Image: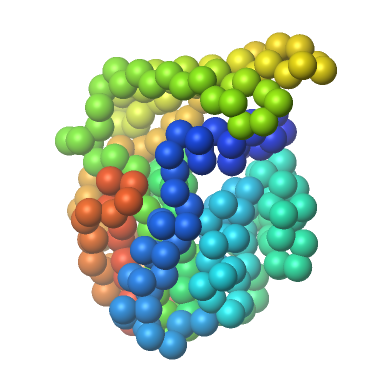
Length: 241
């Protein structure tokens, strides 16, 4: 789970590294509306600090967010005080309503086991009306994960300088990414902290099978802004928890 130090710089890091939240959100909205033209309500699961959710708020009449990390959610609450934001685990949440669309971006679903993924997809289905649309962004598939990938950036969003260095490697059936941050601030000086992200390298057919078992007619869409594609499903039937 993301801590307060990273939550503070999260949006700066990804935006300055080239993540285009408006373009990604617009693309997802187009995928949803091509399957459900009247879609007006949306739940963003693992909404983080609200990067996508703020854009979805301009594209849909009724948006809400769900996030496990209280540190990330506190940032989102400051930025979107009028939006309903829920603290909860995607594997076990129950908001008590349904939506026209449920989205889960940034490969957040890959931070769990295959069995937990199946539980999560059923939770998504329970929060969708019949005919509602789910959009899930996966992590890399096993065959296209870049073993040993190293990235380095020096970012200057404001009065601070942020240095980020990362290294990714396989660890069993998952990828482990170790990231080091050095943040220099004129007032508080220099601080260093690390983040470690473990993503399961689920194959494409596992995502598709899990979505089908949760009651979705499923399609994999390639050529997306992130490069990892999207799984888009239409809820066909009700499922149990």
